[in-house]
Length: 158
Length: 321
Image 1: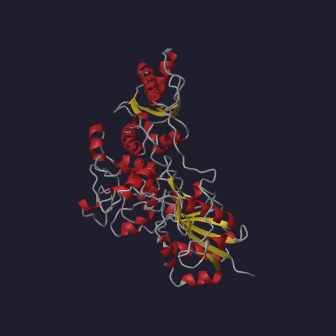
Image 2 (image 1 turned 180 degrees about the vertical axis):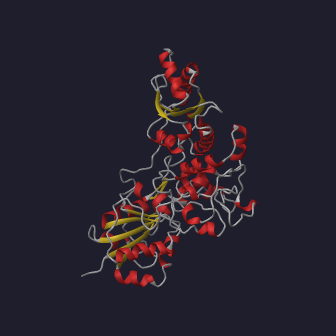
Image 3 (image 1 turned 45 degrees about the horizontal axis):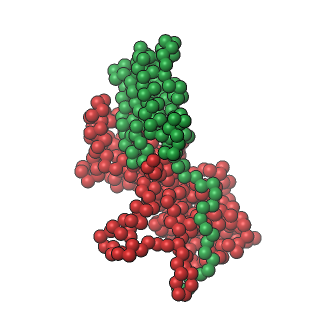
């Protein structure tokens, strides 16, 4: 990518579960831990609520990376929502790969309510990893202008 | 009073949609009687210049099938948009990109390289490639320019209605045409017509139960039971992510739904919805085990997005950075 990597600030969308990870992020904040400011947090009730289309939409609308944080295995408030998130992320990574999007732009981590430090570390590390990958420019497909030439008007004799 | 004018056109398509229109059988005579067919290159003799000579917005209904993948497709999309009052993306290609849209997982150069160099039956030592302009002794020849990406009709021009299906089922085509001929009030622009408003599972009729899949099978690896949900049996069936309207034809022939009726209502990205559905039914919790099961899905993008790559949120394979 041509963009100067020193100037490039990655836009990162985080989907955080209400019960563990969001509370963990809160703990990091109240404990005044330093973490990268690039993460835009969206709080959901469970990481199992993260539909793959949310992640794709984030990429489509300009996110350079997406971070999904949920409860540790066995800790899910809804018993197995985090396993659902795990399977979705593993499958979605394969799709991203085939669409030419680096799968490292999507990461799933388990962060408990007590792990403020882990939240700060994961969000900062992920930000640096995405920064190294550079900006993601998705081609959306919609043509706003006529691209082709006018039709050939002359008829070719058979 | 003069008859309403009807146009049908095919862009990047296989011709199946045209056959589907004729598959309404003798009712085609009613259609031909009600409408004045002003343009239908597949079935009748018209030239593009005939369409260009028509006043703008003079065609009452245009059924446009096929995706947009070259300059001719695009020019005709713009031309027919200008001439038609109501433009309908007819069939999966025009609506979602369909099979031609799978080209978006590769590049034009890769396609040319394969078609004009690598195929075993090709002998092309001069590396001849198609050129848009060619000066022949008889005069200058033009052929359409092939684009890097395949697009849906609505990605190129505004579209009033969408009729899904590969091809749309004749009964559905007939429903739409009869409604129009009886003067029904048209639904709001942007609507999907000639289809259901649920998922394919609603029409399937196989009993559904809590799913616990631990292994996926390809269709030739297993003899599927008729009376059990195919997804329960580990066969990837696109039913849960696909719009109803076809009558679950494939499933009734004991074959999994391939997803040709496009994303289910209120679903933007058919493949993403399928990922979501599959992730819910895989009954495993260890990443290694999950990946081992996912390895059994031979071609995830080609399976989940078989009919909708251009209309998906990622649209095409991104050029490597």
